[in-house]
Amino acid sequence: MMIVFLLPWLLSGCSSVTTATNTQTPVVVRDGVTYMRAESGLSYAVIDWDHSATTVEIAGSIDDIPVTYIDPLVFKDDVNLTSVVFNENLAVIGQEAFYGCSALNNLVFPSTLSTIDYLAFARCTSLETLVFPKILATIGNWAFAYDTALTYLDFTLGRTAIGNYAFFGCSSLVDIDFSYTLRVIGQDAFKETPWDSGLPEGFIYLGNYLYEYRGTIAPDQIIELDTNTSYIGYNAFKNQTNLTAIIIPENVARIYGYAFSGCTQLASVILPSLLIEIGFEAFKNCSSLTVVELPPSLSKLGVGAFSGCTSLTAVTLSTSFDVLERQVFAGCTSLTSIFLPKRLKSIGESAFADCTVLTTVVFEDDSLLLAIGAKVFRNCVSLTGVVLPAKLTDIGMYAFSNCRNMTQVYLPSTLKSIGLQAFYQCTSLTSIVIPANVSIMDADVFLDCSNLTIYCELPRMPISWDGLWNHDDRPVVWNYHG
Image 1 (cartoon, rainbow, N blue to C red):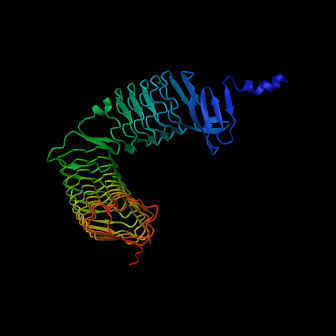
Image 2: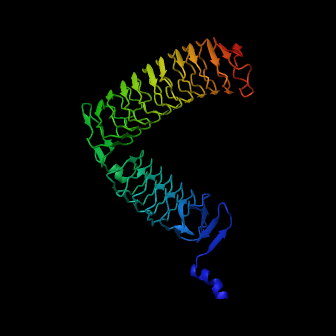
């Protein structure tokens, strides 16, 4: 009878198994690794490690339920860990999961792995070679940074997006095999590696990906990209001050961050008709650029993409835009007017800040705009008036501060909140009507509006308004129905 009772334990092998009963998130411990079942009951995650051995095997499943995730920090700074076995089903390795595992030297990734997160294997200084699976979609920022023994990388199987600084400071990395379908190499992903420092001058292509133009462009040099180019990489032409014009082929789908930043002599650029993305500060401080026509295909325009383009007089926005990122046209001191398309739902912080000659802002009929972010039109000193769209609900802090020549502004009935000092120093504004739906009014909204009379549709001040909303005690007419 005793033998029959013990038989399941004998068949399970010598590994210890402990289960803590919890109907919502059961916890299982195997060979020093703690697994927690997801609330959905469809998967397990690795949540802890007892540091009891130099090797560890991550289970592929617990009771036929797959182990798909390794939590952040689980194995961090285990300097005795030399080997990890990943089984199939694992999809995500979390942030800093193996950070600082300086003895780890044996890694074979499972074919199911899709994400290696931020700093996941950074400072694993014994890793020498890595082969990445076909399905791997993302290597996070700094994921393998300062892995100083790493000599070889194989990306040939898939289309992995490589994050910013992903292999930064890998001081032994001399050889990389890339896929010809490579899509993204983040900013300085391979900087301070022998591979990067050994690249020749001129155009550096990885398949159809223009990694960089290495060296200095001569003043009279004509720049024409290969007709098969699909992507222009981070920093590709950054600070090439002799670049005056460039022919970008129709195949280019994405121009990544800082690609033309600081190209102060770049006077004209024709963007391809199928372009999808312009990245972070891609054309920042291109101070000779005068006109930009954004193609209808463009769906992403990065933070600060054209900021500091001081000669830019005209911009045609794609009708497909639903978000304008922060600082996208900040400091464009020659921009006189902007037409904002119907689909636009929000405008990010400082999007048009310091556009000092901007006089006209027009929203397309039936605009879907819901929010104007902080400082969007700050210091637009030539703006004389604006009619805000009918669905708008929020105006951010300092949104129109120092628009000192603005004489008229129309606030729609849908408006619910007005942020801190939103109309600070609008000294030419003589009247404004606050709709009845405004439930949040922050402090000093009309500070230094020395000529303003305020008309409020509400019969009295709501308790939800800040007590200092009218700090200058400007005249207020309550229960206004003009």
